[in-house]
Structure formats: structure tokens, C-alpha cells
Image 1 (cartoon, one colour):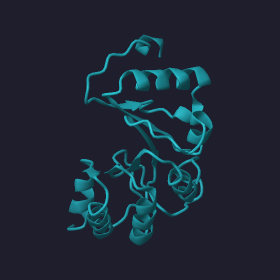
Image 2 (cartoon, rainbow, N blue to C red):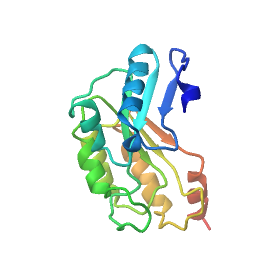
Image 3 (cartoon, helix red, strand yellow):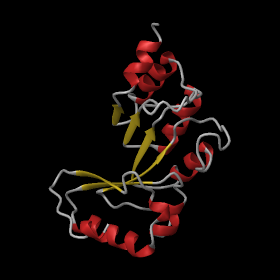
Length: 181
């Protein structure tokens, strides 16, 4: 997007880089430009997310990445492998294994949440040590196998004990209501 080549950010802004896209498909010049902007705006926080977090090691020279205003993230909608029924992304286990290797700030999106094993997800997230976790439901009616509200509630309670910021997205209310119907 050449129209975004001269961004202006305020201190404290939180910018989701490549929203609705994936940095895994960006050419090197775009990645270099993003990093130049991140370094220029040191008082602004930037999130770079990929469904293939293994690309971060290739793009940024290894697993040690301590840029203070930069968050690396991935989606872990479940710990279970449903094959490629819902996504062509690497398996959840591969995404977890890759992201846990990185240093620095980390972000996890559990959206849309798919049926999972709470204990396994909690263990994975303890190992990843994310700064932020967002949890949301299937708001696009893709008929995904969603967990019970009891599982979601158990996951949220466990995450609040060790994740600095746990964000519940609006769509979770539907799962909560569904547990009473």
C-alpha cells in the first residue's frame, strides 16, 4: 500500500501491522520498511502476526528479538489438529513450538476459538509467555466446532493468572448465552 508509506503514529498507539494480511507473504523490501518504521516510532507499539511464526526467524535473523516496542504473534485457535479442514496454516502444535522459541514481546489470538483441551492450551501459553492474549468466537458463522462455555471460562480464568493482558472479544457473549439455552 504505497499510500501508507509515510505513516504518523502517536506515542502509546498500538498498531496491528498487516491487519487482514500475513507478513509471511510480504517481500523483503516491505519487511525492511516495517522495521524502519518500528525503530523510528519507539514510543508506539507494533504487532506483527503470522499464521506461520517460523518465518520470523528468517526475517529477523533468529529467535532473539528484543525490540521493546514490537510484538510477534500468531493465532492458536485450538491445540487440536483438525487437518486442513479449517485452515491451510501450519498445525497449532507447530505454531506453538515456533513462537515459544522467540524472546521479546508476544501476542496470541485465540480467535475464532475452536474446541480445545484447556490444560494443554494453558501449558502451551505458559511456555510461550505472551504479553497479550485475545479470545474470540466464530463471528462469521463458519460452523466451527466451538468449545463449551465451561471450557472457555476455565481457559480465561487460568490465563488471567499469568498473562498480563487477557482480552475477551465481543462474540464470546454468544457462547456464554448458548450454555444456558
